[in-house]
Length: 351
Image (cartoon, rainbow, N blue to C red; front, side, top):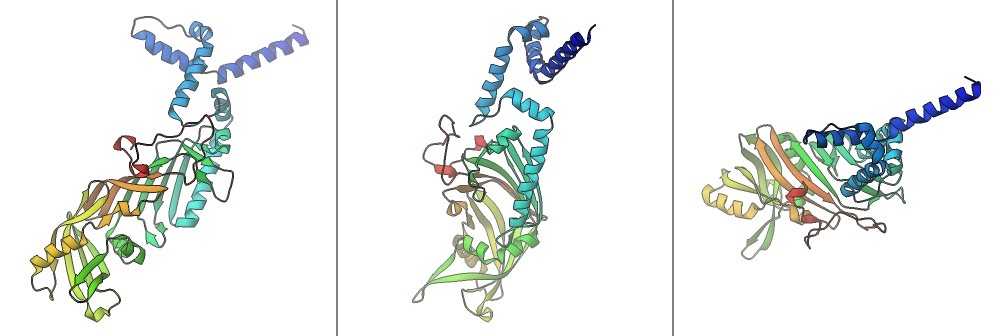
């Protein structure tokens, strides 16, 4: 064989090897084999793939577009980027960048895992999913305990302004959190948390509305009961005027937006009729937390479960984050909005 023919032969072999590497014939044959086995027929991979190459790419693109609210890179392009290791490198870099940003803002131990469609899609702000875990982090000085957050829907970011990256489509985030009694006690001492709770307003004859304040709360969990020891006083008054109380009750989730305390028991040396005061305090305190009051135009949070044990408090919920200024490209589709409920109307089916 001449040198010229040998070069041509090597070129042809190289092209065939590359085509076999990136062509999705293998997956098409696997699907076809499963479909024909039920009919007792023998699948012939070579003939099927050769006769319907266009259908293979069409089905792949159709399946991809049905699960994403935006267009992603083609199958061949994504496969090439995966084979060359470009997607893996981009995923690691994106995860480290997100970790750096979160650690700077929240502190603590942060882990982030980013899944991509491809490197070129990342450059367009399109991400497949994100998994994040926080331990020892805090938001505005309030510890968040151990938190795991993950997305089950694609994320589309607007990267035109690198200093103010925004969402283009809403994102649903599944959240799991666990707090120890010590972390809850520290959080209750925070003024921000106290202000987010339902105000303890008491109307006194001749004195008008008085704001009550719980000082130096200590939290203890006994089986499924929560025990809070605190000093109850008028807001701004001296601690010597306060009344020491020990409140025991059960935390219950009402609906998915309210946390209430039930079966309340009050103990205190200065309380004359603890039973009547317990009924009064239960009506005054509930709802202990009202998540609807915390809704904003770009985010809302709802709880799906809340468990109390001696180890502390654990809960699961869903957070939906919406773009402040939606900028959907022409021809692209965003996630559907359910009625006029806004971003707070998140169905359990989307969880």
